[in-house]
Image 1 (cartoon, rainbow, N blue to C red):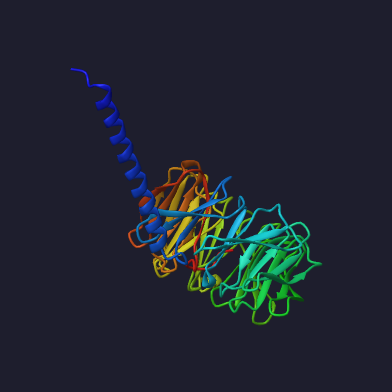
Image 2: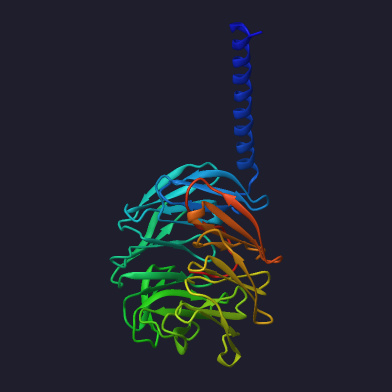
Length: 381
Protein backbone atom coordinates (compact mmCIF):
# COMPACT_ATOMS: atom_id res chain seq x y z
CA UNK A 1 0.00 0.00 0.00
CA UNK A 2 1.36 3.43 -0.94
CA UNK A 3 1.36 6.12 1.73
CA UNK A 4 -1.16 8.91 1.13
CA UNK A 5 -0.17 12.56 0.60
CA UNK A 6 -1.05 13.49 4.18
CA UNK A 7 1.23 10.78 5.51
CA UNK A 8 4.03 11.91 3.23
CA UNK A 9 3.53 15.48 4.38
CA UNK A 10 3.71 14.44 8.02
CA UNK A 11 6.98 12.58 7.35
CA UNK A 12 8.45 15.62 5.62
CA UNK A 13 7.43 17.87 8.50
CA UNK A 14 8.92 15.38 10.96
CA UNK A 15 12.21 15.27 9.08
CA UNK A 16 12.26 19.08 8.92
CA UNK A 17 11.71 19.34 12.67
CA UNK A 18 14.49 16.82 13.33
CA UNK A 19 16.83 18.74 11.02
CA UNK A 20 16.05 21.99 12.81
CA UNK A 21 16.71 20.35 16.18
CA UNK A 22 20.03 19.01 14.84
CA UNK A 23 21.08 22.45 13.61
CA UNK A 24 20.05 24.00 16.92
CA UNK A 25 22.01 21.39 18.84
CA UNK A 26 25.09 21.95 16.68
CA UNK A 27 24.87 25.72 17.09
CA UNK A 28 24.41 25.36 20.85
CA UNK A 29 27.39 23.02 21.08
CA UNK A 30 29.57 25.40 19.05
CA UNK A 31 28.52 28.32 21.23
CA UNK A 32 29.23 26.26 24.35
CA UNK A 33 32.69 25.42 23.06
CA UNK A 34 33.48 29.09 22.43
CA UNK A 35 32.23 29.95 25.92
CA UNK A 36 34.26 27.24 27.66
CA UNK A 37 37.57 27.55 25.77
CA UNK A 38 40.17 29.80 27.37
CA UNK A 39 40.86 32.03 24.38
CA UNK A 40 44.22 33.14 25.76
CA UNK A 41 45.39 29.51 25.46
CA UNK A 42 43.59 28.53 22.26
CA UNK A 43 45.52 27.37 19.19
CA UNK A 44 44.83 29.72 16.25
CA UNK A 45 45.09 28.58 12.62
CA UNK A 46 45.52 31.02 9.74
CA UNK A 47 43.87 29.86 6.52
CA UNK A 48 44.94 30.68 2.97
CA UNK A 49 42.61 33.24 1.35
CA UNK A 50 40.21 33.44 4.30
CA UNK A 51 39.51 36.12 6.94
CA UNK A 52 38.24 33.39 9.28
CA UNK A 53 40.75 32.08 11.81
CA UNK A 54 39.68 28.74 13.35
CA UNK A 55 40.82 28.03 16.88
CA UNK A 56 41.51 24.66 18.48
CA UNK A 57 40.79 23.69 22.07
CA UNK A 58 44.16 22.24 23.22
CA UNK A 59 42.40 20.09 25.82
CA UNK A 60 40.30 18.23 23.25
CA UNK A 61 42.25 18.87 20.02
CA UNK A 62 39.05 19.85 18.24
CA UNK A 63 38.00 22.97 16.36
CA UNK A 64 36.07 25.02 18.94
CA UNK A 65 35.08 27.99 16.79
CA UNK A 66 36.35 30.76 14.50
CA UNK A 67 37.43 34.36 14.81
CA UNK A 68 36.81 36.84 11.97
CA UNK A 69 39.97 38.91 11.44
CA UNK A 70 38.15 41.38 9.20
CA UNK A 71 40.71 40.86 6.43
CA UNK A 72 42.63 38.02 4.82
CA UNK A 73 45.67 37.99 7.09
CA UNK A 74 49.20 37.84 5.82
CA UNK A 75 50.20 37.47 9.46
CA UNK A 76 48.51 37.41 12.84
CA UNK A 77 49.95 37.96 16.30
CA UNK A 78 48.63 37.67 19.85
CA UNK A 79 48.58 40.12 22.71
CA UNK A 80 47.50 37.46 25.17
CA UNK A 81 47.40 39.48 28.42
CA UNK A 82 44.61 41.67 27.00
CA UNK A 83 43.05 38.97 24.79
CA UNK A 84 43.66 40.70 21.47
CA UNK A 85 44.55 39.26 18.07
CA UNK A 86 46.42 41.51 15.61
CA UNK A 87 45.99 40.97 11.88
CA UNK A 88 47.70 42.56 8.88
CA UNK A 89 47.25 41.83 5.19
CA UNK A 90 50.41 43.44 3.76
CA UNK A 91 48.26 45.84 1.68
CA UNK A 92 46.47 48.24 4.03
CA UNK A 93 48.22 50.97 6.04
CA UNK A 94 46.54 49.75 9.20
CA UNK A 95 46.22 46.84 11.61
CA UNK A 96 43.05 45.10 12.80
CA UNK A 97 42.73 44.51 16.54
CA UNK A 98 40.30 41.69 17.24
CA UNK A 99 38.87 41.22 20.73
CA UNK A 100 39.07 37.48 21.42
CA UNK A 101 36.21 37.64 23.93
CA UNK A 102 33.64 39.72 22.04
CA UNK A 103 34.88 39.27 18.46
CA UNK A 104 34.72 43.03 17.85
CA UNK A 105 37.25 44.55 15.42
CA UNK A 106 38.99 47.91 15.69
CA UNK A 107 41.07 49.12 12.73
CA UNK A 108 44.02 51.32 13.72
CA UNK A 109 45.73 53.48 11.05
CA UNK A 110 49.53 53.27 11.09
CA UNK A 111 50.85 55.50 8.32
CA UNK A 112 52.85 52.56 6.94
CA UNK A 113 51.92 49.34 5.17
CA UNK A 114 53.04 46.67 7.65
CA UNK A 115 54.41 43.44 6.25
CA UNK A 116 55.50 42.01 9.55
CA UNK A 117 54.30 42.23 13.15
CA UNK A 118 55.93 40.97 16.32
CA UNK A 119 54.82 41.32 19.94
CA UNK A 120 57.07 42.03 22.91
CA UNK A 121 58.08 39.34 25.38
CA UNK A 122 55.50 40.52 27.90
CA UNK A 123 52.78 40.30 25.25
CA UNK A 124 51.73 43.95 25.48
CA UNK A 125 53.72 45.93 22.91
CA UNK A 126 53.48 45.22 19.15
CA UNK A 127 56.00 46.39 16.59
CA UNK A 128 54.97 46.58 12.93
CA UNK A 129 57.44 46.99 10.08
CA UNK A 130 57.07 48.20 6.52
CA UNK A 131 59.34 45.70 4.78
CA UNK A 132 59.88 48.01 1.82
CA UNK A 133 60.76 51.30 3.53
CA UNK A 134 62.11 49.75 6.71
CA UNK A 135 59.98 52.08 8.87
CA UNK A 136 58.86 50.58 12.19
CA UNK A 137 55.81 51.59 14.25
CA UNK A 138 55.20 50.74 17.91
CA UNK A 139 51.57 50.53 19.00
CA UNK A 140 49.77 51.34 22.26
CA UNK A 141 47.19 48.56 22.45
CA UNK A 142 45.27 49.96 25.40
CA UNK A 143 44.73 53.38 23.79
CA UNK A 144 44.56 52.04 20.21
CA UNK A 145 47.09 54.53 18.89
CA UNK A 146 50.61 54.73 17.50
CA UNK A 147 53.26 55.31 20.16
CA UNK A 148 55.87 56.37 17.65
CA UNK A 149 57.53 55.67 14.34
CA UNK A 150 61.18 55.09 13.51
CA UNK A 151 62.40 55.76 9.97
CA UNK A 152 65.72 55.75 8.23
CA UNK A 153 66.26 52.01 8.60
CA UNK A 154 67.16 49.73 5.74
CA UNK A 155 64.41 47.47 4.32
CA UNK A 156 63.50 45.04 7.08
CA UNK A 157 63.87 41.26 6.99
CA UNK A 158 63.09 40.25 10.58
CA UNK A 159 62.77 41.69 14.08
CA UNK A 160 62.70 40.44 17.66
CA UNK A 161 62.23 42.04 21.08
CA UNK A 162 64.68 41.73 23.95
CA UNK A 163 63.73 39.47 26.85
CA UNK A 164 62.74 42.49 28.97
CA UNK A 165 60.65 44.02 26.12
CA UNK A 166 62.59 47.30 26.26
CA UNK A 167 64.56 46.91 23.04
CA UNK A 168 63.65 45.91 19.49
CA UNK A 169 66.30 44.43 17.20
CA UNK A 170 65.75 44.76 13.46
CA UNK A 171 67.53 42.77 10.76
CA UNK A 172 67.79 44.39 7.36
CA UNK A 173 69.90 44.80 4.27
CA UNK A 174 72.45 47.02 6.03
CA UNK A 175 75.79 45.30 5.85
CA UNK A 176 77.44 44.26 9.06
CA UNK A 177 74.94 45.64 11.59
CA UNK A 178 71.63 45.09 13.37
CA UNK A 179 69.45 48.15 13.96
CA UNK A 180 68.36 48.83 17.53
CA UNK A 181 65.21 50.66 18.70
CA UNK A 182 64.55 51.74 22.29
CA UNK A 183 60.95 50.57 22.78
CA UNK A 184 60.31 52.92 25.72
CA UNK A 185 61.25 56.12 23.88
CA UNK A 186 60.64 54.80 20.32
CA UNK A 187 64.02 56.10 19.23
CA UNK A 188 66.76 54.59 17.16
CA UNK A 189 69.85 53.60 19.11
CA UNK A 190 73.39 52.76 18.02
CA UNK A 191 73.41 49.73 15.73
CA UNK A 192 75.21 46.57 16.81
CA UNK A 193 78.00 45.33 14.56
CA UNK A 194 77.57 41.70 13.51
CA UNK A 195 81.12 41.07 12.37
CA UNK A 196 79.66 39.72 9.12
CA UNK A 197 80.15 41.20 5.66
CA UNK A 198 76.50 40.83 4.64
CA UNK A 199 73.06 42.08 5.50
CA UNK A 200 70.82 39.94 7.70
CA UNK A 201 67.88 37.69 6.87
CA UNK A 202 66.61 36.45 10.23
CA UNK A 203 67.09 36.74 13.97
CA UNK A 204 66.60 34.57 17.04
CA UNK A 205 67.71 35.02 20.63
CA UNK A 206 68.31 32.98 23.74
CA UNK A 207 65.56 32.83 26.35
CA UNK A 208 67.80 34.60 28.88
CA UNK A 209 68.20 37.47 26.42
CA UNK A 210 71.99 37.46 26.46
CA UNK A 211 72.70 36.47 22.88
CA UNK A 212 71.24 37.19 19.48
CA UNK A 213 71.81 34.91 16.48
CA UNK A 214 71.91 36.31 12.98
CA UNK A 215 71.40 34.53 9.69
CA UNK A 216 73.46 36.48 7.15
CA UNK A 217 72.26 37.20 3.64
CA UNK A 218 75.36 35.61 2.15
CA UNK A 219 75.25 32.39 4.17
CA UNK A 220 78.36 30.63 5.35
CA UNK A 221 77.78 30.76 9.08
CA UNK A 222 75.63 32.18 11.87
CA UNK A 223 76.53 35.46 13.55
CA UNK A 224 76.47 35.64 17.36
CA UNK A 225 75.90 38.94 19.18
CA UNK A 226 76.59 39.53 22.85
CA UNK A 227 73.64 41.71 23.89
CA UNK A 228 75.07 42.42 27.35
CA UNK A 229 78.15 44.07 25.85
CA UNK A 230 76.69 45.10 22.49
CA UNK A 231 79.17 43.44 20.20
CA UNK A 232 79.85 40.38 18.04
CA UNK A 233 81.30 37.08 19.21
CA UNK A 234 82.93 34.47 17.03
CA UNK A 235 80.44 33.26 14.40
CA UNK A 236 79.24 29.69 14.32
CA UNK A 237 80.82 28.09 11.30
CA UNK A 238 78.35 26.14 9.21
CA UNK A 239 77.53 25.40 5.60
CA UNK A 240 76.47 27.96 2.99
CA UNK A 241 72.83 26.84 3.19
CA UNK A 242 72.49 27.00 6.97
CA UNK A 243 69.34 28.47 8.44
CA UNK A 244 69.44 30.71 11.49
CA UNK A 245 70.43 29.06 14.77
CA UNK A 246 67.51 28.04 16.97
CA UNK A 247 68.11 28.14 20.74
CA UNK A 248 66.22 25.57 22.77
CA UNK A 249 63.65 26.86 25.26
CA UNK A 250 66.00 26.73 28.23
CA UNK A 251 69.01 27.89 26.24
CA UNK A 252 70.88 24.67 26.99
CA UNK A 253 71.19 23.81 23.28
CA UNK A 254 71.71 25.61 20.03
CA UNK A 255 70.46 23.91 16.85
CA UNK A 256 71.52 24.74 13.29
CA UNK A 257 70.16 23.07 10.15
CA UNK A 258 72.13 22.96 6.90
CA UNK A 259 69.84 22.60 3.89
CA UNK A 260 72.64 21.82 1.48
CA UNK A 261 74.36 19.10 3.47
CA UNK A 262 71.16 17.86 5.11
CA UNK A 263 72.63 17.99 8.61
CA UNK A 264 71.65 19.15 12.08
CA UNK A 265 74.38 20.69 14.26
CA UNK A 266 73.74 20.54 18.02
CA UNK A 267 75.81 22.80 20.28
CA UNK A 268 75.53 22.28 24.01
CA UNK A 269 75.53 25.59 25.91
CA UNK A 270 76.52 27.31 22.66
CA UNK A 271 80.03 25.93 23.10
CA UNK A 272 81.87 24.97 19.91
CA UNK A 273 83.82 22.06 21.54
CA UNK A 274 80.48 20.56 22.61
CA UNK A 275 79.27 20.18 19.03
CA UNK A 276 77.64 17.16 17.40
CA UNK A 277 76.67 16.96 13.73
CA UNK A 278 73.79 14.61 12.93
CA UNK A 279 72.18 13.45 9.71
CA UNK A 280 68.96 15.36 9.01
CA UNK A 281 67.25 16.47 5.78
CA UNK A 282 66.86 19.38 3.40
CA UNK A 283 63.86 21.71 3.32
CA UNK A 284 64.24 22.75 6.99
CA UNK A 285 63.45 26.35 7.93
CA UNK A 286 62.57 26.01 11.61
CA UNK A 287 63.42 23.74 14.53
CA UNK A 288 61.24 23.15 17.58
CA UNK A 289 62.18 21.89 21.05
CA UNK A 290 59.77 20.32 23.54
CA UNK A 291 59.28 18.16 26.61
CA UNK A 292 61.59 19.97 29.03
CA UNK A 293 64.19 20.57 26.35
CA UNK A 294 64.82 16.86 25.84
CA UNK A 295 63.42 16.61 22.31
CA UNK A 296 64.16 18.44 19.06
CA UNK A 297 61.56 18.25 16.28
CA UNK A 298 62.84 19.06 12.80
CA UNK A 299 60.23 19.32 10.00
CA UNK A 300 61.30 18.82 6.38
CA UNK A 301 59.22 20.10 3.48
CA UNK A 302 61.17 18.04 0.93
CA UNK A 303 60.71 14.66 2.65
CA UNK A 304 57.33 15.49 4.28
CA UNK A 305 58.57 14.15 7.57
CA UNK A 306 59.22 15.27 11.13
CA UNK A 307 62.64 14.17 12.39
CA UNK A 308 63.02 13.56 16.13
CA UNK A 309 66.24 13.91 18.15
CA UNK A 310 66.97 13.12 21.79
CA UNK A 311 68.90 16.18 23.00
CA UNK A 312 70.21 14.52 26.15
CA UNK A 313 71.73 11.61 24.25
CA UNK A 314 72.26 13.80 21.14
CA UNK A 315 71.02 11.18 18.69
CA UNK A 316 68.11 10.62 16.29
CA UNK A 317 65.17 8.77 17.83
CA UNK A 318 62.65 8.47 15.03
CA UNK A 319 60.82 9.89 12.06
CA UNK A 320 57.12 10.75 11.76
CA UNK A 321 55.67 10.66 8.25
CA UNK A 322 53.37 13.56 7.38
CA UNK A 323 50.53 13.55 4.86
CA UNK A 324 51.81 16.79 3.26
CA UNK A 325 54.65 19.27 3.50
CA UNK A 326 54.50 21.15 6.82
CA UNK A 327 54.21 24.93 7.33
CA UNK A 328 55.04 27.04 10.41
CA UNK A 329 53.72 25.50 13.63
CA UNK A 330 54.04 26.10 17.37
CA UNK A 331 54.72 24.23 20.61
CA UNK A 332 52.43 24.64 23.63
CA UNK A 333 53.81 26.60 26.61
CA UNK A 334 54.16 23.40 28.66
CA UNK A 335 56.20 21.78 25.89
CA UNK A 336 53.83 18.83 25.56
CA UNK A 337 52.45 19.27 22.03
CA UNK A 338 53.52 20.54 18.64
CA UNK A 339 50.75 21.76 16.32
CA UNK A 340 51.92 21.57 12.71
CA UNK A 341 49.82 22.81 9.75
CA UNK A 342 49.77 20.70 6.59
CA UNK A 343 48.38 23.08 3.92
CA UNK A 344 47.96 20.65 1.03
CA UNK A 345 46.26 18.07 3.25
CA UNK A 346 43.85 20.53 4.88
CA UNK A 347 44.94 19.27 8.30
CA UNK A 348 46.72 20.27 11.48
CA UNK A 349 48.96 17.51 12.81
CA UNK A 350 49.22 17.16 16.59
CA UNK A 351 52.48 15.69 17.91
CA UNK A 352 52.73 14.43 21.49
CA UNK A 353 56.31 15.24 22.54
CA UNK A 354 56.39 12.86 25.50
CA UNK A 355 55.14 9.93 23.44
CA UNK A 356 57.08 11.10 20.36
CA UNK A 357 54.10 10.30 18.21
CA UNK A 358 51.45 11.77 15.94
CA UNK A 359 48.30 11.64 18.08
CA UNK A 360 45.74 13.56 16.00
CA UNK A 361 45.06 15.02 12.57
CA UNK A 362 42.58 17.86 12.82
CA UNK A 363 40.69 18.48 9.57
CA UNK A 364 40.11 22.15 8.68
CA UNK A 365 38.03 23.61 5.85
CA UNK A 366 40.77 24.96 3.63
CA UNK A 367 44.54 25.26 3.60
CA UNK A 368 46.12 26.05 6.99
CA UNK A 369 49.21 28.23 6.62
CA UNK A 370 50.45 28.82 10.17
CA UNK A 371 49.77 28.14 13.83
CA UNK A 372 49.81 30.74 16.58
CA UNK A 373 49.34 30.39 20.31
CA UNK A 374 50.21 32.52 23.29
CA UNK A 375 53.35 31.73 25.26
CA UNK A 376 54.65 29.26 22.68
CA UNK A 377 57.38 27.14 24.26
CA UNK A 378 60.79 28.52 23.34
CA UNK A 379 61.86 31.43 21.19
CA UNK A 380 61.36 31.53 17.46
CA UNK A 381 61.33 34.47 15.13
